[in-house]
Length: 317
Image (cartoon, rainbow, N blue to C red; front, side, top):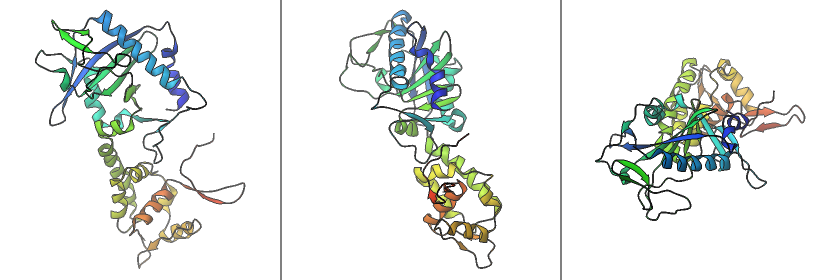
C-alpha cells in the first residue's frame, strides 16, 4: 500500500457530513499473553458521538494535514531503513500471527459482554471499531497506559454505573486521541512502531519469515555454513534485510567464482571453500554483503557509470 492508496481509503474521514459509528472494545491480557476482548454496555448516543470526534480528528490530522514542516511517506515495515518518525509503516495482517489474536474477536463480532468483576485499570489495550456509511469498517488499536491526571482536552474518563459505560469526569480510563495500529482491508497501518513491535510480536513473526528465506539459500547449497547469515535475524535492522531477500535472485544461480568476480567490482571480498564448490561466509560483514547482493542493493549508474551501494530503492515504471 502506498500513500495515495491509503489516503483514498481514508478519504471519507475528511468529509464533515460523514456519519461514523464507533464501538469501544476493551482488551485484557493474561500471564500467558492470551487476550480476551469485551464490548462494554454503553450509552451509545453519548459514547459513540464522543469517540467519533476523536477518531475523525485523529485520522484527518495525521493523514491529511501536511505542511512544509511535516510530510510523511508510507513504507513497508520490513524495509531496513524504516525508522524515520515521518514514516507510516504497513504490513499485511497475515504476516503477523498475533494480529489475529488481537483483532479477530472484534472483527468477527465474537467479543464477550463486559463482566462486573473486571477493573478498568487492568485493561491491556482497547480497540475502536469504526463503521462508515460509505467506506466500510476500520479498526484502531491503542495500548492502554494508566496515568494519574486526566487531561480533559486530550482524553475522556469512563466509569461503569448500573452496568452501563458513561462519560465521567474522573481519572479512570483514558482514551487518547492517538492510536498505535490501524487494521484496514487486511493491512496493518503502523503509527507507533515501538509499541507495534512489542504488542504484536513483530520480531518473533519476522524471524519465522526470515528462517523461510534462509531455507531458500540453504537449498541451493551455495554457502558452506549459514550460521553467520542466520545470526542476522537477531538484530532488527539486519533482520529486515533477510526479509527482503528475493528467492528468485539470479545470484543464487551463479557459481561461487562468478559471485566473487562480480562482488570485487563493488569492493566486496568473498572466500571460497578449498574445492571451489561453495562460498565461505565466516564474518558478519560478509554475511551482510551477501544479503545485500541478493537484495540488489548494488547498482551501476547508466549516466555516470559509477557504482553505488544504496539504502533504498524506488522502482520506476
